Length: 62
Image (cartoon, rainbow, N blue to C red):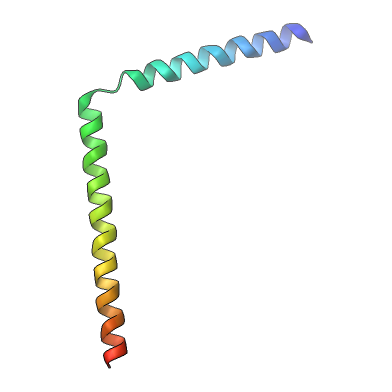
């Protein structure tokens, strides 16, 4: 039993190191893409919100 748990811990450690090295390999281009997508997402939410308020105001005025 102890041997199998040690093996799983070793495998888990290997996976963790692979994930951390993959995270550290992010380039500035990846960060730029993330920033652009975030700005686009915020703008989309803002646009939906504005159209929603316009629609609500039109209904309440009618």
